[in-house]
Structures are given as structure tokens and as C-alpha cells.
Image (cartoon, rainbow, N blue to C red; front, side, top):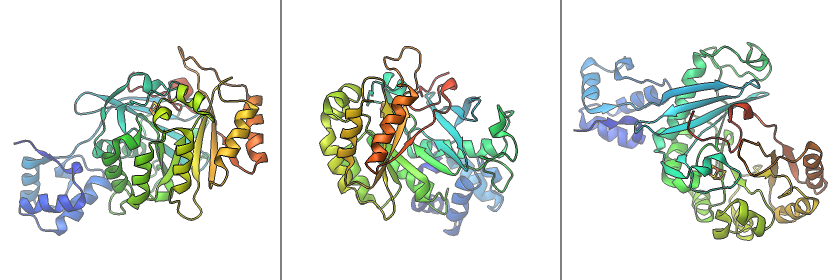
Length: 365
Ligand code: SF4
């Protein structure tokens, strides 16, 4: 009989499974806490269970965890983790320190089918969806690595007590924010992404505030509508990157299915909680989407949406067809948006030297 991975179960399903092994209902809360809050990797660690209960669990179940294949650090403090999955596939997660935040960017698929032309992940196509527990396990694995950080600090930002360092109770670094912006399109792996979000937000599990979790999508409109009805109020980011269908069709093929006008209309309808904004990500590509006219069009498109714009100057990599605009062009573009009272931030490129920046994840060495 194949063993059951306990992390593939919701709390209710866990209750039923433990009951089938003759365990009392209250045990499910204890086991759940071991899995997510204490990050247990074996039943022998669960010292508040009886020996017999642990033996029964060992016989019928197991606890999944990711295998760390490679850990790389960039000089700006960004770290990239390459993880191995049970079937031998590989995914990447990126940890980004920034002032008082420590953000973990996690993957939702092995590869990606969206084929955005500026993205290295998209070049390899989609291998498969991640299971909910494989999405969550990235957070658990990195949290564990941070409480026992084995890497020597690469540069001042990681030195003890520096600004930008967020320390947890154990003295290790603590993840403050989660972004679903790694490999894959989260909304095309809808059910597993929702299952993972529930665990991330559950106060009995990983207990992240919904304000600290951001889901980024290339604009899958039907799934955005489903998410709006789900009652899971994480932050929403839209990877927009163009102001005309002509350009967006060329750089993001998904636009042929869900063109800009329909996408913007879906954003206007999205049930935003009070005081929240939708984030529009705009990867700036030299001579493609960085003109004054683009800036003006962007302002018109986003009029009436409570939002902010993240300008991300393209991170060049060897073999890429696109170039990064110069700083002056980026700043002029930002000024156009600010001039129309749009909140606009230019994102500093982090981790580019280890291919950990936006759109650079491949899931390989
Ligand atoms: S940018 Fe995101 S959605 Fe587009 S190919 Fe890359 S991973 Fe997929």
C-alpha cells in the first residue's frame, strides 16, 4: 500500500485519516502544528504522540519535504534555492532582502506554458503543475534554512544587526512576505495554488497575513474572477508589460486570448478589500514599451483602478532578444505616471548575477 503524504491533506482530511488509524480528533491539531509550525520531517519528532501512534503513522504515512540541490547568494543579499522534487524535477525559489522585509518568491509550476518572450522560465515550456504541498514546502524549507543559516554572509546586508535583517524568535532570519512570482503562472494551476494559499494563511499552519502574500498573474481572466469569489484576499499583481495589444500579443501570447481591454475591465471588477491596491508589473524593454506614448497610454488604461505600478527595468541575460532601457528613460516614464497621480515605483534589480531576478528562473544549475 502506498503511504499517504500528510501534507497533501487539509486539516479536515487529516482528522479523518488519523481517525482511520484509531487516533483521537485532537491529535490532528497537534500533527498539523508539527507539520507546519515546527516543520517536522519525521514522526519520531512528534514527541507528544504515543509510541504506538508514531509507529502507526510510520507504517501508513510520510511527510514530504524538498531536497536542497543548490543554494546561491548574490552580493546584494539575494539568495536562490534550487530544490529537487520527488519525481526528480527541479524548481527554484528566491529570497530577497529589502529594508525591513524579507520576501520569498515561490514557484507554482515546473516551467511555464505562458511563453512570455522576455522570460527565461517560459523558454523551457511547462513540465507539470506543482502540488499544493510542493508550493508550501518551499516556504517551510527556506524557513528551516534561515533558522540555521549555513552560508557565510556574502556582503554587508547579511551581517548581523544590519538594517534590512528580519530576525525571528530563534535568532534566525524570518520570512515576512511571500510572492507567487517564481516559476509558473499560479492561476493556471488554480486548485493547487488555492490549497497552498489556505495553508500559508491558516493561523494553525503557516499563519501569514493576507496582506503579506501576493499572487501574480499574466492575466487569466476566468481564474481571476474565480479568485475574487474565493474569499482569499491576498494581494493581486498583474503582469501587464504593454499598453497596446500589438505589443502585448508579441511579448505575452496570452494576450491573444485575454486582450488588454478585457483584462483591465476584469481588474476594475475585482473585489479589492478596503485600502488595497492592485499592483501592475511593467517590465521595461528598450524601444518596445518604454516610450512617452506608452507612459500616457498606461495612465489612461489604469484610470479609475486603485493601483500602483512597479516598473521593472529588464534584467538582461545572455541570449535574450531584449535590452534594458537606460535609467533616464525609466525615470522619465515614471515621472509621466506620477504626473497623472499614479503611484509608481522603480524596482531595483536584485539577484541578477545569479539569475535570480524577475523572469530569470529556470529550475536548473
Ligand atoms: S513571466 Fe511568468 S507567466 Fe510569463 S512565462 Fe515567465 S513565469 Fe510564465
